[in-house]
Image (cartoon, rainbow, N blue to C red; front, side):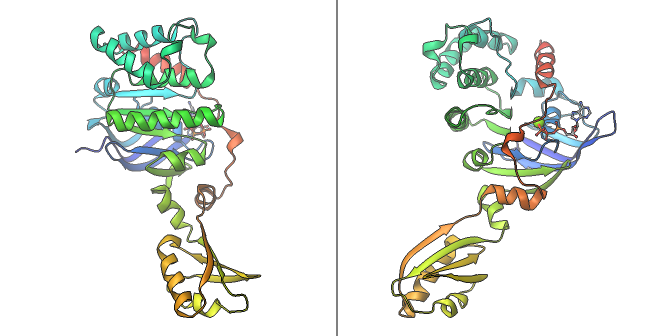
Length: 334
Ligand SMILES: Nc1ncnc2c1ncn2[C@@H]1O[C@H](COP(=O)(O)OP(=O)(O)OP(=O)(O)O)[C@@H](O)[C@H]1O
Ligand SMILES: [Mg+2]
């Protein structure tokens, strides 16, 4: 099966000379939820802009659903869905009318549109409010409606640029569930940028961290955390007074051992796989353990390690002209 997104040395230099994307090569797998993270100005939106045909690359190549970005922009546009951080729903229309409009823009046959709308409204928990004007919707309802509009034409690839920005944790969790369900039900491949690391951790199958237009690291959330080279395993022996330190140090894969009162803090690259060995080694040395706890490093530490910057959630994305671009995109559809 073709990978739905493939980029080879993709590059974007803006007219002012900013090299916003500086040679990005990635492959996104079918049905994957792929997270694209990075500090402000890293090049996330520019990459999304190019992959959705709204911005012309300055160099390199990219393929979306197997189609060449340079020559097949119209076909690509029909096969992708797009949801931006900025609200694109029309306030003066009802939820249902917004979906009808989206279906018309994408030339979805009316009978099929009706079936799909009913199903999407249900899935997004919007059936009850479908005839209300969108201006009365909450932020979460609005974003769910925009997601529904973004997939009304059954796209093969769905691009979400900061889909949950500004929503409260409950709203964010709801969007996450809906995105996962769309992937599970329709097999859509999802490419998303987000400023919420915990969200990316839960939702994404793989994550790339981009900074200064270049990919710094790419892998599953667990792989990225493994790269930090340090899970922390804390063990407490049943009997006080035994010295576990030499036993623990002898276990292959243990990087360091620190004693804190009756507990020992063990740093290891592979906490999960080493835990049984440690438990057995202590047992064999007649020093059975009373408790074991494993703490994995978080994506915050990964972010710090690979971008040299502490991650600050409140920064949010810089203002973009994406809503404008979205309208251009819609206008060019027909
Ligand atoms: N239209 C434009 N013209 C010139 N420079 C631009 C333009 N749009 C973005 N840039 C610059 O390109 C770089 C990458 O911007 P981009 O919007 O892709 O970053 P981002 O990772 O999406 O950031 P954020 O997290 O703030 O949304 C930044 O230095 C930005 O100032
Ligand atoms: Mg952005």
